[in-house]
Image (cartoon, rainbow, N blue to C red; front, side, top):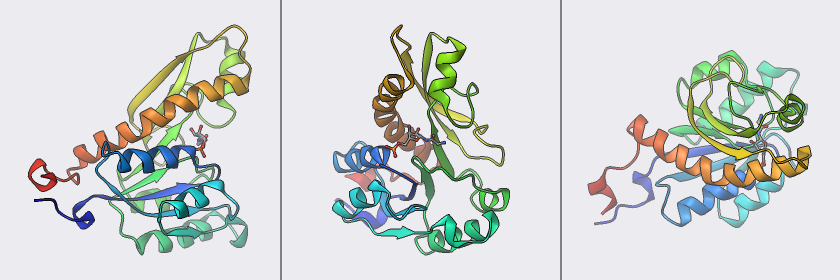
Length: 206
Ligand code: GAR
């Protein structure tokens, strides 16, 4: 017997931009390689391209614009109010470019994942591809990690590696990493959900 979507672990995906990682998650769910349901996509940017991707997939969208709030804690609180309405099992940051404060992170202990475009612990923060090239590394990549109060410092779940080629500039390197992110993130989410024990059991999937 196949149970309805109500049995699936629920995700809320936070984005700021194009949402190609969101699309990879939507596609993995559609193809059956990720047993989850996206309850909502929330963007801090009203014009984020990923909002249209969500709408096309029939996923509810919300905008919580950081510019409408006096400071980070006000923004974080408004974001949490929107999220609570969807009661997610897991929050998935997919190109979400705001730093979440400690109070926010403590609301969801062990229940926020982020994808970072570097092989953590190297190159935390922004501008990772340019910094990797400047450092002369032979290998670069992306990491999926649990979000903790310290930026880009939580436990790494999975990484994907790419070679750095002699002619690379930050854009060519970013494109090679991003293609790997699209494979990495859905697989890491599936693995983490099974660890959280909110993934459906085999008997529920039949
Ligand atoms: C991705 O490369 C992601 O790793 C990065 O932003 C890009 C978003 O692309 N995230 C961060 O830098 C987080 N600090 P997308 O909107 O097409 O998924």
